[in-house]
Amino acid sequence: MRITTITWIVLFSLLPGGLGGCANTGHPASAGASHFSGERYPVRLINRARFPADFVVADVNYPSGEARGTIIVDTGASKLFLIEGDGKARRYAIAVGKAGYAWKGAADLQRKTEWPSWYPTDEMLAQAPGMPDTIPPGPDNPLGARAMYLYVNGKDTLYRIHGTSEPWTIGTKASSGCIRMFNEDVIDLYARTRIGAKVIVE
Image 1 (spheres, rainbow, N blue to C red):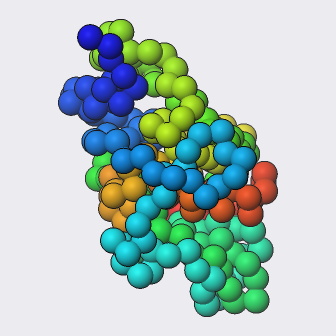
Image 2: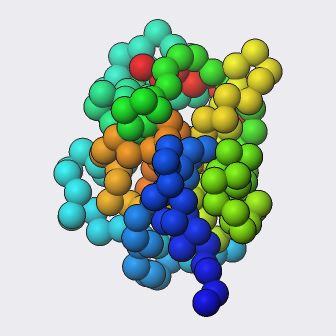
Image 3: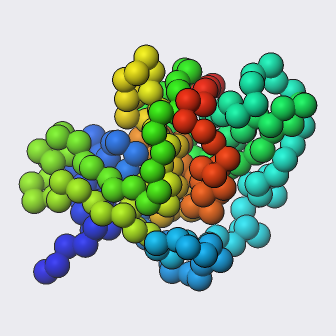
């Protein structure tokens, strides 16, 4: 039997400790058309009508003393805000870390990747013999269409802001600590962020 990428992810989620390193679990999203030209892989668009109204990307009033370009992650509200200045921010819906995996603090965005590969940790590989050591880019990759990597004092925290193949988890505490976004939203955020940007996770 051929074991697919999604099968490996689901199988590993059943092991003690489950998945870490920003992986997703569950059923793959159904395929859909893409309105993003120039993307290497199809972007599975979501039906916004199935989600709360405030899950729509919007420029909102958001007074803040942080500099323009700062990212503030409000884990309690499951929202991410990109500071635009003049009391405004761009708001996105997110999924955050489940109990025991949540991370909070300040970091710097030090790397950005389009359609990243995903690399299971040594612990994952030890618990799932035969699991590939690399999950290639594509619509079913746990990191989705984009990944932005968070560093503290020059060291990779292993936490990411990234897309997801599981849009139904947005608005929940479902990840292994990373910040998940709809793929079309993370593409938008990615284009608006710069290397070195401050990221605050509250």
